[in-house]
Amino acid sequence: MAKVIHVMLRCLDLAASKAFYKTAFGLEPAHELDFPDFTLSYLRNAENDMEIELTWNKGRQEPYSHGDGYGHVAVCVDDLEAEHARLVQAGLSPLEIKRFHDGDTLLARFFFIVDPDGYKIEVLQRHGHYQ
Image (tube, rainbow, N blue to C red; front, side, top):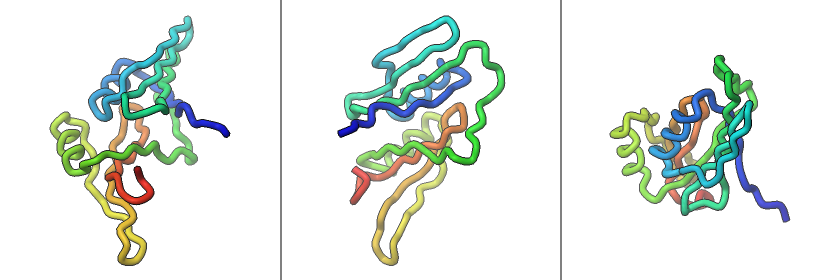
């Protein structure tokens, strides 16, 4: 069986992106490969086997276009309100907490936050399918 090992996101400012993911989600470089034209930085924390691969193409000046296909990366947390408050306190401007229902059944509670390159990250309360 295949195992998902990473999601790659291109970043314009590697230092800013690493700082964001460390502050927001406790993700730190587990492995980094530096080449003349680009750097690959693989971020993870003790909670994860899967990594976010930040790709920094050296010398790029203009922001990346996400097109109309990219949606979001999702993470789950134990205490949604506490995480939301922590991110507000850190100055990272998460959007408001929302609820997703199927009729009267609560499927999820979540909010979105945006990284320095405009990638959306959904933060979900651990519940039901989202563990």
